Image (cartoon, rainbow, N blue to C red; front, side, top):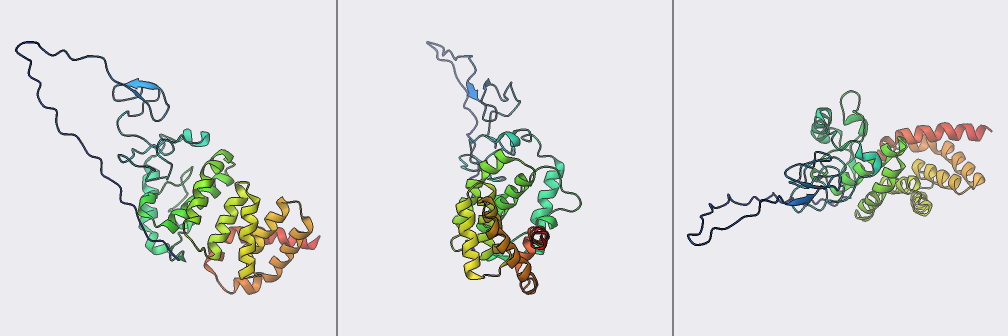
Length: 289
């Protein structure tokens, strides 16, 4: 299932060269020498000239507050990281505004070049294996691929991966900031497969929306009562709700279903292998008690 559409960005237009000014033979025109004042789109300070005197940012093209890339004229969202134009970055992102360095560029090119090689059937398009996106150790901080070249399904997955990275790093403000965008991205895809329902449920779980997480777990288990990701999500939601007996039952079902479900070699099991291994280790410890 896929919604294959891409938005075409507008190229910035440039005004023609200024015409020469000829003085009037009667009354010469007097032009003001007072420089125009602008508001820096990065730090919000008032500034004049070509660069902000407070943070050094360009006062020409608007710039993304999260990843620092110059935005296309009249763009509503950053083509690289998806942040709405004009929005402020969460505190944990502001320290990396100027940090789009050469390793990031190399990693982004490698990611895009490997799309065709690591693609799996997902939302009718590709789901990229996060570990295969880079050669060697991943650079510090979140990945910033050019989302303008991805399908809607791939953009949703990228937002999911980004949220999980923030959650693992303990960046709660960034999780809360990007979670609504990720939820909207998945909801726009329409009828999700079980993989998509798990992603949406996990987003709800880490963003503090237990109803969303529980609804996705119920949907998965209704379609497949032994689905490993559905049982994991259901156990997590039961724990957060303080229902220890329900959590234990879901973990028991998880251990019992492991062998038969893994034999199916589902795409979502491969994509979320780390979640499954972690949950099974915990489930076995719980069941032995």
